[in-house]
Length: 437
Image 1: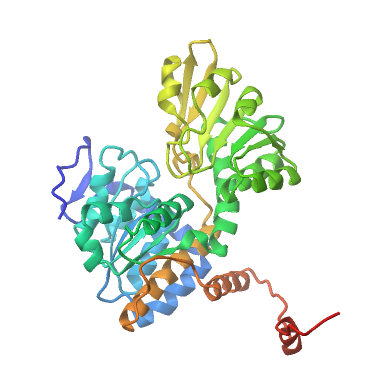
Image 2: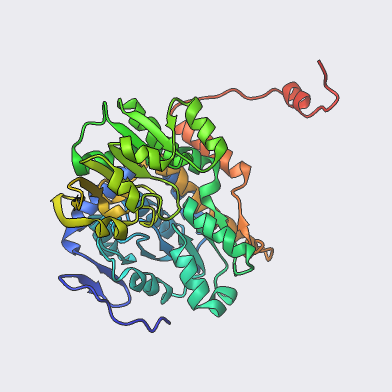
Protein backbone atom coordinates (compact mmCIF):
# COMPACT_ATOMS: atom_id res chain seq x y z
CA UNK A 1 0.00 0.00 0.00
CA UNK A 2 2.82 2.41 0.82
CA UNK A 3 5.55 2.06 -1.77
CA UNK A 4 7.99 3.48 0.77
CA UNK A 5 11.69 2.59 0.58
CA UNK A 6 13.13 0.00 2.94
CA UNK A 7 13.92 0.80 6.54
CA UNK A 8 16.87 3.19 6.81
CA UNK A 9 18.03 2.23 10.28
CA UNK A 10 21.22 0.26 10.69
CA UNK A 11 22.27 -2.01 13.52
CA UNK A 12 20.83 -5.11 15.10
CA UNK A 13 17.06 -5.39 14.90
CA UNK A 14 14.61 -8.20 15.39
CA UNK A 15 12.24 -8.25 12.46
CA UNK A 16 9.51 -10.39 11.05
CA UNK A 17 8.48 -8.95 7.73
CA UNK A 18 4.99 -7.52 7.79
CA UNK A 19 4.55 -8.48 11.46
CA UNK A 20 6.96 -6.51 13.66
CA UNK A 21 10.23 -4.62 13.85
CA UNK A 22 11.71 -3.94 17.29
CA UNK A 23 15.15 -3.26 18.69
CA UNK A 24 15.82 -6.41 20.71
CA UNK A 25 13.51 -9.33 21.48
CA UNK A 26 15.85 -10.37 24.28
CA UNK A 27 14.30 -7.54 26.33
CA UNK A 28 10.89 -9.21 26.29
CA UNK A 29 11.01 -10.56 29.86
CA UNK A 30 11.93 -7.14 31.21
CA UNK A 31 9.07 -5.61 29.27
CA UNK A 32 6.63 -8.24 30.51
CA UNK A 33 7.35 -7.26 34.12
CA UNK A 34 6.81 -3.59 33.32
CA UNK A 35 3.45 -4.39 31.72
CA UNK A 36 2.39 -6.48 34.71
CA UNK A 37 3.23 -3.54 36.99
CA UNK A 38 1.06 -1.21 34.89
CA UNK A 39 -1.82 -3.71 34.85
CA UNK A 40 -1.76 -3.78 38.64
CA UNK A 41 -2.15 0.02 38.70
CA UNK A 42 -4.79 0.46 35.98
CA UNK A 43 -7.95 -1.03 37.52
CA UNK A 44 -10.44 0.88 35.34
CA UNK A 45 -8.96 -0.38 32.09
CA UNK A 46 -8.60 -3.89 33.49
CA UNK A 47 -12.28 -3.91 34.48
CA UNK A 48 -13.16 -2.95 30.90
CA UNK A 49 -10.96 -5.80 29.67
CA UNK A 50 -12.85 -8.28 31.84
CA UNK A 51 -16.20 -6.97 30.60
CA UNK A 52 -15.54 -6.71 26.87
CA UNK A 53 -13.53 -9.87 26.35
CA UNK A 54 -16.85 -11.66 26.92
CA UNK A 55 -18.72 -9.72 24.21
CA UNK A 56 -15.84 -9.30 21.70
CA UNK A 57 -17.08 -6.00 20.17
CA UNK A 58 -14.01 -5.66 17.96
CA UNK A 59 -14.17 -9.11 16.39
CA UNK A 60 -13.61 -8.68 12.65
CA UNK A 61 -12.20 -5.14 12.98
CA UNK A 62 -8.61 -3.94 12.60
CA UNK A 63 -7.10 -1.06 14.58
CA UNK A 64 -3.91 0.86 13.77
CA UNK A 65 -2.43 2.75 16.70
CA UNK A 66 0.23 5.46 16.79
CA UNK A 67 0.93 6.23 20.42
CA UNK A 68 3.92 6.25 22.79
CA UNK A 69 4.98 2.65 23.38
CA UNK A 70 5.01 2.57 27.16
CA UNK A 71 3.96 -0.05 29.67
CA UNK A 72 0.58 1.72 30.00
CA UNK A 73 0.05 1.65 26.24
CA UNK A 74 0.76 -2.07 26.31
CA UNK A 75 -2.15 -2.53 28.74
CA UNK A 76 -4.42 -0.69 26.29
CA UNK A 77 -3.16 -2.80 23.37
CA UNK A 78 -3.78 -6.05 25.23
CA UNK A 79 -7.25 -4.86 26.23
CA UNK A 80 -8.18 -4.24 22.59
CA UNK A 81 -6.86 -7.65 21.62
CA UNK A 82 -8.78 -9.39 24.40
CA UNK A 83 -11.91 -7.60 23.12
CA UNK A 84 -11.46 -9.21 19.70
CA UNK A 85 -9.48 -6.62 17.74
CA UNK A 86 -6.74 -7.30 15.24
CA UNK A 87 -4.18 -4.65 15.96
CA UNK A 88 -0.97 -3.06 14.73
CA UNK A 89 1.06 -0.30 16.37
CA UNK A 90 3.79 2.31 15.94
CA UNK A 91 5.25 4.91 18.30
CA UNK A 92 4.13 8.53 17.98
CA UNK A 93 7.51 10.05 18.79
CA UNK A 94 11.01 8.92 17.74
CA UNK A 95 12.29 8.84 21.32
CA UNK A 96 9.31 7.69 23.37
CA UNK A 97 9.35 3.94 22.75
CA UNK A 98 10.37 1.66 25.61
CA UNK A 99 12.28 -1.06 23.78
CA UNK A 100 11.59 -3.64 26.47
CA UNK A 101 7.82 -3.06 26.22
CA UNK A 102 7.98 -3.21 22.41
CA UNK A 103 9.88 -6.50 22.65
CA UNK A 104 7.35 -7.97 25.08
CA UNK A 105 4.49 -7.10 22.75
CA UNK A 106 6.26 -8.50 19.69
CA UNK A 107 7.07 -11.70 21.60
CA UNK A 108 3.34 -12.10 22.30
CA UNK A 109 2.53 -11.79 18.61
CA UNK A 110 1.52 -8.13 18.48
CA UNK A 111 2.21 -6.45 15.13
CA UNK A 112 4.39 -3.56 16.33
CA UNK A 113 6.86 -1.34 14.49
CA UNK A 114 8.63 0.81 17.07
CA UNK A 115 12.01 1.36 18.66
CA UNK A 116 13.75 4.12 20.59
CA UNK A 117 15.52 6.48 18.21
CA UNK A 118 13.66 5.74 14.98
CA UNK A 119 14.03 9.32 13.71
CA UNK A 120 14.62 8.45 10.05
CA UNK A 121 12.15 5.59 10.08
CA UNK A 122 9.33 7.26 11.97
CA UNK A 123 6.97 7.40 9.00
CA UNK A 124 8.22 4.05 7.71
CA UNK A 125 6.84 2.55 10.93
CA UNK A 126 3.51 4.35 10.56
CA UNK A 127 3.24 3.14 6.99
CA UNK A 128 3.74 -0.48 8.04
CA UNK A 129 0.66 -0.18 10.24
CA UNK A 130 -1.34 1.09 7.27
CA UNK A 131 -0.25 -1.91 5.21
CA UNK A 132 -2.50 -3.72 7.67
CA UNK A 133 -5.53 -1.88 6.17
CA UNK A 134 -7.16 -0.88 9.49
CA UNK A 135 -10.81 0.06 9.98
CA UNK A 136 -9.99 2.38 12.91
CA UNK A 137 -7.09 4.65 13.82
CA UNK A 138 -5.92 5.58 17.30
CA UNK A 139 -3.54 8.52 17.33
CA UNK A 140 -1.44 10.74 19.58
CA UNK A 141 -0.31 13.85 17.74
CA UNK A 142 -2.23 13.25 14.50
CA UNK A 143 0.68 11.83 12.46
CA UNK A 144 -1.20 8.63 11.65
CA UNK A 145 -4.42 10.47 10.79
CA UNK A 146 -2.53 13.00 8.67
CA UNK A 147 -0.75 10.21 6.81
CA UNK A 148 -4.03 8.45 6.04
CA UNK A 149 -5.69 11.66 4.86
CA UNK A 150 -2.82 13.08 2.84
CA UNK A 151 -1.47 9.95 1.16
CA UNK A 152 -4.48 7.62 1.05
CA UNK A 153 -7.48 9.88 0.59
CA UNK A 154 -9.73 7.28 -1.07
CA UNK A 155 -8.85 4.74 1.60
CA UNK A 156 -9.68 7.26 4.35
CA UNK A 157 -13.06 7.98 2.75
CA UNK A 158 -14.10 4.40 2.03
CA UNK A 159 -12.44 2.00 4.48
CA UNK A 160 -11.70 3.78 7.77
CA UNK A 161 -14.86 4.12 9.87
CA UNK A 162 -13.48 6.27 12.67
CA UNK A 163 -10.60 7.17 14.95
CA UNK A 164 -9.52 8.90 18.14
CA UNK A 165 -6.93 11.48 19.13
CA UNK A 166 -5.10 11.53 22.45
CA UNK A 167 -3.42 14.90 22.79
CA UNK A 168 -4.01 18.66 22.62
CA UNK A 169 -1.77 19.27 19.61
CA UNK A 170 -3.47 16.55 17.61
CA UNK A 171 -6.97 17.81 18.42
CA UNK A 172 -5.97 21.32 17.34
CA UNK A 173 -4.84 19.93 13.98
CA UNK A 174 -8.00 17.88 13.60
CA UNK A 175 -10.27 20.85 14.25
CA UNK A 176 -8.33 22.84 11.64
CA UNK A 177 -8.67 19.96 9.18
CA UNK A 178 -12.39 19.68 9.88
CA UNK A 179 -12.89 23.44 9.44
CA UNK A 180 -11.22 23.17 6.03
CA UNK A 181 -13.54 20.25 5.07
CA UNK A 182 -10.53 17.94 4.87
CA UNK A 183 -11.59 15.44 7.53
CA UNK A 184 -12.81 12.22 5.94
CA UNK A 185 -13.97 10.14 8.91
CA UNK A 186 -15.19 10.84 12.46
CA UNK A 187 -12.52 11.30 15.12
CA UNK A 188 -13.24 11.39 18.85
CA UNK A 189 -11.26 14.01 20.77
CA UNK A 190 -10.17 11.90 23.74
CA UNK A 191 -7.90 14.72 24.90
CA UNK A 192 -10.88 16.97 25.56
CA UNK A 193 -12.52 14.61 28.04
CA UNK A 194 -12.60 15.92 31.60
CA UNK A 195 -11.20 12.59 32.81
CA UNK A 196 -8.29 13.10 30.43
CA UNK A 197 -7.08 16.67 30.44
CA UNK A 198 -7.90 17.52 34.06
CA UNK A 199 -5.89 14.51 35.26
CA UNK A 200 -3.53 13.09 32.62
CA UNK A 201 -2.52 16.55 31.36
CA UNK A 202 -2.29 18.23 34.75
CA UNK A 203 -1.08 15.55 37.16
CA UNK A 204 0.52 13.16 34.70
CA UNK A 205 2.45 15.79 32.74
CA UNK A 206 3.32 17.67 35.90
CA UNK A 207 4.89 14.71 37.68
CA UNK A 208 6.51 13.02 34.68
CA UNK A 209 8.06 16.24 33.35
CA UNK A 210 9.71 16.98 36.68
CA UNK A 211 10.81 13.32 36.74
CA UNK A 212 12.44 13.66 33.31
CA UNK A 213 14.24 16.88 34.24
CA UNK A 214 15.64 15.39 37.44
CA UNK A 215 16.71 12.13 35.79
CA UNK A 216 18.60 13.96 33.03
CA UNK A 217 20.26 16.58 35.25
CA UNK A 218 20.04 15.49 38.93
CA UNK A 219 19.59 19.19 39.65
CA UNK A 220 17.92 20.50 42.82
CA UNK A 221 14.73 22.41 42.06
CA UNK A 222 14.44 24.19 45.40
CA UNK A 223 15.61 27.79 45.06
CA UNK A 224 15.78 27.67 41.27
CA UNK A 225 13.71 29.93 39.03
CA UNK A 226 11.53 27.65 36.94
CA UNK A 227 9.92 29.08 33.79
CA UNK A 228 7.05 27.37 31.96
CA UNK A 229 5.82 28.66 28.62
CA UNK A 230 2.08 28.07 28.36
CA UNK A 231 -0.27 27.90 31.34
CA UNK A 232 -2.76 25.43 29.95
CA UNK A 233 -3.51 22.09 31.57
CA UNK A 234 -0.01 20.68 30.97
CA UNK A 235 1.94 23.83 31.76
CA UNK A 236 -0.02 24.53 34.92
CA UNK A 237 0.61 20.98 36.10
CA UNK A 238 4.36 21.33 35.61
CA UNK A 239 4.55 24.70 37.33
CA UNK A 240 2.50 23.54 40.33
CA UNK A 241 4.88 20.61 40.84
CA UNK A 242 7.93 22.86 40.48
CA UNK A 243 6.49 25.28 43.04
CA UNK A 244 5.78 22.39 45.38
CA UNK A 245 9.46 21.44 45.22
CA UNK A 246 10.57 24.90 46.24
CA UNK A 247 11.16 26.62 42.91
CA UNK A 248 10.45 30.26 42.21
CA UNK A 249 7.94 29.96 39.39
CA UNK A 250 7.26 32.04 36.28
CA UNK A 251 4.65 31.52 33.57
CA UNK A 252 4.72 33.06 30.11
CA UNK A 253 1.46 33.32 28.20
CA UNK A 254 -0.33 34.82 25.19
CA UNK A 255 -3.83 34.28 26.60
CA UNK A 256 -4.97 36.92 29.08
CA UNK A 257 -7.27 34.68 31.11
CA UNK A 258 -4.56 32.03 31.48
CA UNK A 259 -2.12 34.71 32.65
CA UNK A 260 -4.58 35.92 35.30
CA UNK A 261 -5.11 32.34 36.47
CA UNK A 262 -1.34 31.82 36.78
CA UNK A 263 -1.03 35.05 38.75
CA UNK A 264 -3.82 34.14 41.18
CA UNK A 265 -2.27 30.70 41.67
CA UNK A 266 0.93 32.26 42.93
CA UNK A 267 3.20 32.40 39.89
CA UNK A 268 4.89 35.42 38.36
CA UNK A 269 3.80 36.21 34.82
CA UNK A 270 6.04 37.93 32.29
CA UNK A 271 7.13 37.72 28.67
CA UNK A 272 9.69 35.17 27.53
CA UNK A 273 12.04 38.04 26.72
CA UNK A 274 11.95 39.00 30.41
CA UNK A 275 11.93 35.44 31.76
CA UNK A 276 14.93 34.42 29.65
CA UNK A 277 17.14 36.77 31.67
CA UNK A 278 16.22 35.35 35.09
CA UNK A 279 15.26 31.72 34.63
CA UNK A 280 17.35 28.70 35.62
CA UNK A 281 15.09 26.02 34.10
CA UNK A 282 12.81 26.51 31.08
CA UNK A 283 10.07 24.15 29.93
CA UNK A 284 7.80 24.75 26.94
CA UNK A 285 4.22 23.46 26.95
CA UNK A 286 2.38 25.41 24.26
CA UNK A 287 1.99 23.32 21.10
CA UNK A 288 3.37 26.30 19.13
CA UNK A 289 6.72 26.55 17.36
CA UNK A 290 9.62 28.92 18.13
CA UNK A 291 8.69 29.70 21.73
CA UNK A 292 12.38 29.87 22.72
CA UNK A 293 14.53 31.47 20.02
CA UNK A 294 17.99 32.80 19.31
CA UNK A 295 17.80 36.02 21.30
CA UNK A 296 16.37 34.13 24.28
CA UNK A 297 19.33 31.75 24.36
CA UNK A 298 21.75 34.65 24.15
CA UNK A 299 20.19 36.41 27.14
CA UNK A 300 19.96 33.33 29.38
CA UNK A 301 22.16 32.72 32.40
CA UNK A 302 25.24 30.56 32.11
CA UNK A 303 24.08 27.00 32.83
CA UNK A 304 20.40 27.47 31.99
CA UNK A 305 18.47 24.26 31.37
CA UNK A 306 15.97 24.12 28.51
CA UNK A 307 13.42 21.40 27.77
CA UNK A 308 10.03 20.77 26.21
CA UNK A 309 6.96 18.82 27.27
CA UNK A 310 4.80 19.65 24.24
CA UNK A 311 4.13 16.92 21.70
CA UNK A 312 6.47 18.16 18.96
CA UNK A 313 10.06 19.37 19.15
CA UNK A 314 9.30 22.65 17.35
CA UNK A 315 8.79 24.76 20.48
CA UNK A 316 12.53 25.21 21.04
CA UNK A 317 14.30 26.49 17.94
CA UNK A 318 17.29 24.16 18.06
CA UNK A 319 18.70 25.37 14.73
CA UNK A 320 18.96 28.88 16.14
CA UNK A 321 20.58 27.49 19.30
CA UNK A 322 23.15 25.77 17.12
CA UNK A 323 23.72 28.98 15.14
CA UNK A 324 24.88 30.85 18.26
CA UNK A 325 26.97 27.95 19.60
CA UNK A 326 30.60 27.04 19.01
CA UNK A 327 30.40 23.46 20.33
CA UNK A 328 28.08 20.77 21.61
CA UNK A 329 28.72 17.73 23.77
CA UNK A 330 26.69 15.16 25.67
CA UNK A 331 27.20 15.60 29.40
CA UNK A 332 24.94 12.77 30.57
CA UNK A 333 22.05 10.80 29.04
CA UNK A 334 19.48 13.18 27.52
CA UNK A 335 21.53 16.26 28.47
CA UNK A 336 23.53 18.14 25.84
CA UNK A 337 25.72 21.12 26.63
CA UNK A 338 25.83 23.93 24.06
CA UNK A 339 28.72 26.38 24.46
CA UNK A 340 27.55 29.71 23.08
CA UNK A 341 29.71 32.25 21.30
CA UNK A 342 29.24 34.57 24.27
CA UNK A 343 30.86 31.98 26.55
CA UNK A 344 27.66 30.87 28.29
CA UNK A 345 26.51 27.26 28.47
CA UNK A 346 22.96 26.11 27.70
CA UNK A 347 21.82 22.59 28.54
CA UNK A 348 19.20 21.11 26.20
CA UNK A 349 17.34 18.06 27.47
CA UNK A 350 15.95 15.15 25.41
CA UNK A 351 16.84 16.77 22.07
CA UNK A 352 13.99 19.20 22.65
CA UNK A 353 11.44 16.40 22.50
CA UNK A 354 9.02 15.28 25.21
CA UNK A 355 11.27 15.29 28.25
CA UNK A 356 8.82 13.25 30.32
CA UNK A 357 8.87 10.35 27.86
CA UNK A 358 12.42 10.60 26.51
CA UNK A 359 14.18 11.04 29.83
CA UNK A 360 11.62 9.36 32.10
CA UNK A 361 8.82 6.80 31.73
CA UNK A 362 5.92 9.09 30.86
CA UNK A 363 2.82 9.51 32.97
CA UNK A 364 2.17 7.25 35.96
CA UNK A 365 -0.03 4.23 35.29
CA UNK A 366 -2.72 5.41 37.70
CA UNK A 367 -3.53 8.53 35.66
CA UNK A 368 -3.24 6.85 32.25
CA UNK A 369 -5.87 4.42 33.52
CA UNK A 370 -8.61 6.98 32.88
CA UNK A 371 -7.19 8.33 29.62
CA UNK A 372 -6.88 4.89 28.08
CA UNK A 373 -10.30 3.85 29.36
CA UNK A 374 -11.55 6.80 27.30
CA UNK A 375 -9.62 5.58 24.28
CA UNK A 376 -11.07 2.10 24.58
CA UNK A 377 -14.67 3.22 25.14
CA UNK A 378 -14.41 5.72 22.28
CA UNK A 379 -13.63 2.91 19.88
CA UNK A 380 -16.44 0.81 21.32
CA UNK A 381 -18.72 3.77 20.54
CA UNK A 382 -17.48 3.99 16.95
CA UNK A 383 -17.96 0.26 16.41
CA UNK A 384 -21.43 0.14 17.96
CA UNK A 385 -22.55 3.14 15.89
CA UNK A 386 -21.21 1.50 12.75
CA UNK A 387 -22.87 -1.83 13.48
CA UNK A 388 -26.20 -0.13 14.18
CA UNK A 389 -26.23 1.47 10.74
CA UNK A 390 -26.13 4.93 12.33
CA UNK A 391 -22.46 5.92 12.04
CA UNK A 392 -21.04 8.93 13.80
CA UNK A 393 -20.93 12.20 11.82
CA UNK A 394 -17.70 13.06 10.01
CA UNK A 395 -16.40 15.66 12.44
CA UNK A 396 -14.32 16.01 15.59
CA UNK A 397 -16.51 14.53 18.32
CA UNK A 398 -16.42 15.14 22.08
CA UNK A 399 -16.54 12.47 24.76
CA UNK A 400 -20.11 12.30 26.20
CA UNK A 401 -20.57 13.48 29.78
CA UNK A 402 -21.96 10.06 30.71
CA UNK A 403 -18.68 8.39 29.72
CA UNK A 404 -16.63 10.91 31.69
CA UNK A 405 -18.69 10.36 34.81
CA UNK A 406 -18.71 6.57 34.43
CA UNK A 407 -14.92 6.45 34.20
CA UNK A 408 -14.52 8.84 37.15
CA UNK A 409 -16.97 6.86 39.27
CA UNK A 410 -15.23 3.60 38.43
CA UNK A 411 -11.89 5.14 39.35
CA UNK A 412 -13.27 6.36 42.67
CA UNK A 413 -14.64 2.90 43.45
CA UNK A 414 -11.20 1.34 42.87
CA UNK A 415 -9.79 3.92 45.30
CA UNK A 416 -12.35 3.05 47.98
CA UNK A 417 -13.92 6.52 47.84
CA UNK A 418 -17.67 7.18 47.96
CA UNK A 419 -19.48 10.42 47.14
CA UNK A 420 -22.91 11.88 47.83
CA UNK A 421 -25.93 11.33 45.57
CA UNK A 422 -28.58 13.97 44.96
CA UNK A 423 -32.08 13.21 46.26
CA UNK A 424 -35.07 13.35 43.93
CA UNK A 425 -36.10 16.63 45.53
CA UNK A 426 -32.65 18.11 44.94
CA UNK A 427 -32.73 17.08 41.28
CA UNK A 428 -36.21 18.59 40.94
CA UNK A 429 -34.99 21.82 42.55
CA UNK A 430 -32.03 22.07 40.20
CA UNK A 431 -34.25 21.73 37.15
CA UNK A 432 -37.06 24.01 38.34
CA UNK A 433 -36.70 27.38 36.64
CA UNK A 434 -39.42 28.79 38.92
CA UNK A 435 -37.49 28.00 42.08
CA UNK A 436 -36.59 31.31 43.73
CA UNK A 437 -35.15 32.60 46.95
